[in-house]
Length: 260
Image (cartoon, rainbow, N blue to C red; front, side, top):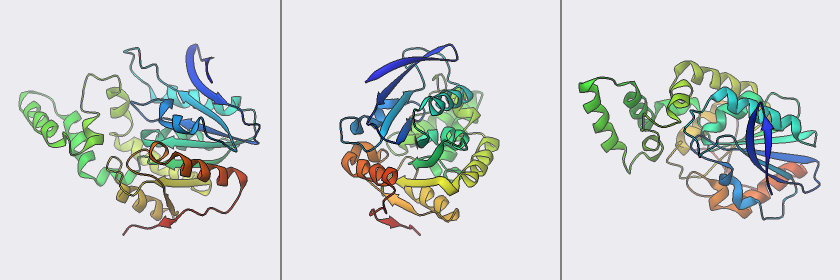
């Protein structure tokens, strides 16, 4: 059921389901999202406890801060009743879970369709960055052209084109910041010993090819589940089996692959 908790003076809404397991999976949504990304798992038979956090109040116009998101997830790691925690980060939350994942209670980190440094080489990323860097009348014409180019083609980029969005500040300070992306690379490498990489074979938002290429550069295999950008939504039963297998310590039977 959904509850609220005061975290650093802020009321945070979260979903909690206690299945009397020794493991707790904490679901961390990306930017411009909510705990709803994991909701297709809530009614299934899980061999793990669930905490899914709404890090942002979507009803306010307040800008979102990365450090605040990190503090919220750190709070719920400590709050978890179990000593074994799995962090599952989706999309742009790769930056959040890679930072808090060093906590000793965190035994596994699942990077599900998350951003990686390799995404910087994609056309969608380059267009998005150029759009947010442009200022003035002539650059504005360029930005308008970028908007037309991304509409319907580069979904991930188009979702973040609004310069007045509450997400613009955190976008510029994280994903579009070269220094942040270098730190992200370092954090992925520091946590790779407890990391699992999961993606669908046709994710056009974070680019399956870029995701797999980066995971392989860390000598990590990739598990393919579902379709498009949210494997949980498109294949909830298969993803639930995957999580059950991880928390039960069983050998996984999902196909792994490498895209060259």
